[in-house]
Each structure stands twice: as C-alpha cells, then as structure tokens.
Image (cartoon, rainbow, N blue to C red; front, side):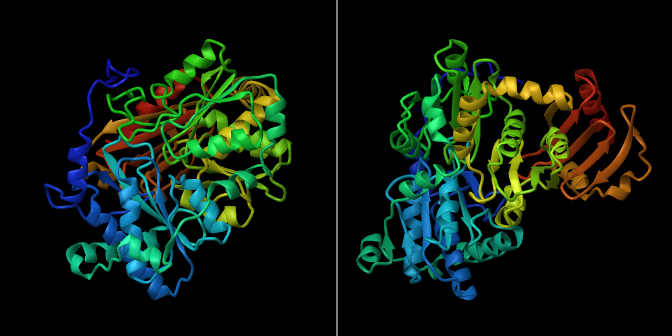
Length: 514
C-alpha cells in the first residue's frame, strides 16, 4: 500500500542523540556480523554499532596480516549519521594493528574507493555506508585489491573473524587517532582531483558545456556533492546547477518514499519528485541524481519524466557502442533481473551478452579484463571497463548529460531503440512471505521444473537456478528471488508481448510458488 504521505516532506524528527547513544551503547545485544550483497547493514544500535565497526576492522587487519597484504587501506564513508565516527573507529583499529590508513577529511563516494584502489594508491578499503537505506541505518563494506565488492568467500571469512572479535572485544587492538597520526600510520589525501581529472578522459564535458540546454544534479544529501562541485568548476559547466547542496544526516529534505520512510533512492519517483517537477516545468532539460554513497544513479527529462534505470542503461549501452567510447570491449553485461532489451542491442551490434547473478561483484573480473562496454543492473548501478569495478552513479549521471547534449532527450532515444528492437514491458513485485517459503524457493533447482513446457501460453526455452529461479520463454521471462534481508519474495517479469501479458506472467509466477 502506498503511503498517503509519499512525496511529501517528513514532519517526524529523527532523534539523533538517541541513535548516537545506541551506536556507542546498544540497549539490546548487537546482532552477529552478516555480509549481504554489499557489506553488513542494520539499524543503528543492535543492527550496527561501534562494536560492529571495530570488530570488522580487526577482522580486516587479521586478514591482511595472514595474507601478507601490503599497502595503505582507504577508510571513510558517506554523509550518514555516524559515518565519520565509524571511519574513525576503523582507522584506530587498523592503526592499532600497525597498518597504514588513508583517512580523507571529506565524505567519500563508493566509486571513488574503487578508483583509488585501482589507481594503486590504496590496497583495499573500508567504506561506512548503508547506500540509500533510511537514515536510521548504517553499514560497513570491504573492497579488496580488485576495487570491487568483496566476493562471498572473502566476506564469509571477514564475518567469521568479526564475530569472534564481537565475542571477545578485549582482543581488538586500537590506537587513538592523534597518536596514529603522530606515528604516520594515519594520513589524509585528496581523493577529488584524481577522480575528476580521470573522469574528463571518458566524459566529453566540452560537449556538455557547449549545449544550449540546462542541466541539474542533486546529490540527495550525499558524498557526491564535493565531486559535482569540482566537476562544475573544472569543466566550466555554466549550464549545470547543483540544485541542492543540503547535507544533513537526518535527510529530512528528501520527500518520503512509497512506504512512508525516508529513502534516498534516485530511481524512486517520490524522492526524485523535485527533479521531476523541474523538468516538467521546463526549468531544466535533464536532471540527474546519485544516492548518498553515489553508487546508484537516477534521472528525469523533459520528454520522459523519471527515466527507468532499465531504459537509461539501454540508452547508455547503445551510445557507448555507437560512439566507440570503450575501445576493445566486446560484451554487454547485465544482472538476471535487468531488461533483455540489452540482449537485443548486443545482438544487433554483434556483441556478446553476459547475464550474471544479482550483485555487482559478479562483473568485477570482466571489468578488469576489459570485457564490458557496459555492466549494469536494474537497481540503477553501472560501470564500464577501464573505469571503476564498483557501480558509479556520478559517472552515469555525467554520461547521461553527455548523451543528452550530443543526441537529445533520453526518453526519445529510448523510444528509438524500442522502435528498432521491440518494446519490453517490465515490472517487479514484492510478495510478503515467511522464512520457510524463502528457504523452499532458495532450494529450487532447474530440474524441479523439467516438466514445465509452457507458461502464459509461451514455450519454456530454459530454466536457470543460480540465483532464485528464472524461467525463459519465447518473448518473455520471469524471475523469483527470495530477499536476503526481508521476508519477501521478489518477482521480476518482462515480456515483449503486451502489458496485459506482463500481468499474466506475474500471476503465473505466483502460482508456480504454491
């Protein structure tokens, strides 16, 4: 049910002092460390507290010592409540173990952590963020030497070690920051200039600056603000406005999402409603946004309003291929739940298509091998070979501005692609469930569907069981995945037949689960 408050500003104050107290002194026992697709996350207090941060940092220190991993570790976070305190605690623990730490003064976007690792200035990172989750949440994730999200084997080991230290906090070593700095174990760094300069080698900022258009960007209160300012200044983008420079860890200025919560999600029409209004009124022809840690993108245009991430990914992929922006790469990559229109675009250009499990970590090797013209996921994450091995919302917004400057409205460009390749109808439905049903769905194998020959009047052409169950049809597909953090089943469906057929697919998917 959609909240009646959706799209409005919150009238409820977040008790910052209470959350700070919960972070340092949880009122209930802290939950064990558990890494999901992108780190350990939870509500401040028992879900994520100072002990979690210190235990994870001590686990990383132990891992680096055991594996003889050398080099400084970049530590930081976004603009969330207690991100800075989390980073400081991690730095004190790493320094307490004799490891060198880079601790920038300003908030650091997730893609910049990856960029710094790939540049060789850091060997790994600890990043304090909970992405676009509500302000009461916090998290911490680790990126190894490949710059991308850590794989399951690595995160399992970190979680195991961290939980041992949670049980025996007396084994956690710390060194106060002032002493760590005096001993040259902790130092700052300029992480803005290298990233912004390198970005200019991939993005045609001259084309953006020369366009007779008005562009807007909204950092959604996040870590990208200083980077958009630097981009605006360095490349003299007088036609670009940063329409909000507000930074407050309660994120009170973000319109409430569909469920009544503040969620800084750049692909939701409710948090993005101010930008949608800007383009509707003609104040700007393009408005882009990235979430607090800047690993996701969103945009709205004069012709299309809020642009679906799937639509934007298709336009970006087509543009990158036609303009030969990523030399040497020969494959488009997408996750299981991302539009199959990318498959048709890849086939039209004679490119390969990689379909990977949900999670950007599955693109890392291919990005490093310079395989992907674009790697994207329907939840508004993307990158390209030769750039970061993390999702980069800043890069995506800048690329979409370049495309708009060069070729016109993103919505119109997407319509050209559907005229050429067919129109996909796409949706995702979250179905409430219980742990038993989630476990049953997770245990499904392709062989369990061996007798299934038709769904919604279409022939079954394949079944995949690597991440939930995906059933491929002649012109459609359905995917059912249990959530890793909530008691819901995520049902994705896409068809090139009709909107009515899409609804039939969802109904058929729900029947298959019974």
